[in-house]
Every structure is written in structure tokens, then in C-alpha cells.
Image (tube, rainbow, N blue to C red):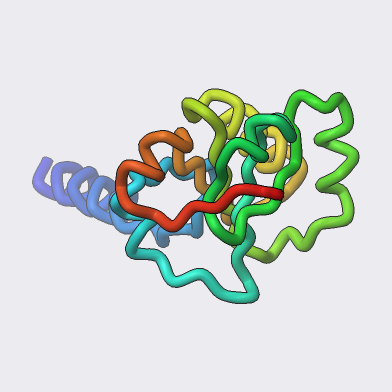
Length: 130
């Protein structure tokens, strides 16, 4: 009986210590947490709102790729899947959907950082397209 109990305990402990793998799904990040990130050449900041929304204000350094354009999935086929992508929109809904599409296509490092208003309110630098 003792051997059975010890075997069960050992099996349980070993199953709890399996190695952790990298991010396997879209990660969510608050505006405050994103503000602390150091962007580099291996990171991409994507504004997935419409061109009109982008023109009215966007985060400095963001690229505009309209999720609703109808060809969003076609556009990201040529992107580097090893880079880190930070996506935002007006509320976090479109960026969440866009991030899920990217994840399904094999992108590994995707963060939905939410809505533009919250990011702007957190003090992130913004600009307007002229």
C-alpha cells in the first residue's frame, strides 16, 4: 500500500513540473505595462483601426493596417513571424480579433494592448498623420 501511495505522489509531482513553453496564444497587456516596454527593430506596433481613425490620432511609431479592409490576413503573410507584435484599435476588440488571426497563422509573440484612448491616457506619445 505504501508503494502505491508513494508512486501516486511521485507521478503527481512529476506531472506538475513539466517544462514551460513560450507564449502559445495572444497575450493581453495593459497600457501601463506597454508603456514600460522597450521597442526595438524586432518589435512592431500595429494600429488596426481604419485610415480615418489613424489620421485622427495614433501612437508614435505605429503602422496602420486596417483590420476591416478585407485583406488583413493577406497583408500579414509577408511579415516576419519571429518579431514581437503589439496591436491596438479603438477598444481592444478589433486588435484582439486581428491578433487571433495572426496567432492562427503561426505568429508567436503577439500582444493585444487594447484601445487607443487608454493608451493615450496612459501618457504614451501620439501623433497625427498630415
